[in-house]
Image (cartoon, rainbow, N blue to C red; front, side, top):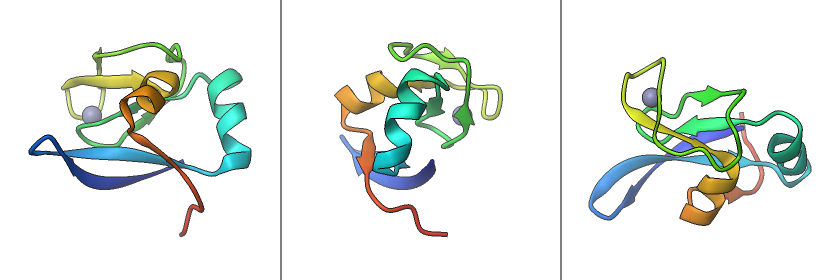
Length: 81
Ligand SMILES: [Zn+2]
């Protein structure tokens, strides 16, 4: 999973970038979450989690991957790097 900074509703947020073959595993096996404020990836987060506290930036902006998909904050595509 990668992150990219996007502008949405006048704010700058991080969006998760996940490869298609990685998405299913990330959703159902890893319980991956992602902080929209700093882009930090966290595991052990339920798919429908929202506004969890981020251990990295301290904001309550960690969401589960399923929730991020609904919010339009996941891009499924090639991860470069
Ligand atoms: Zn954060």
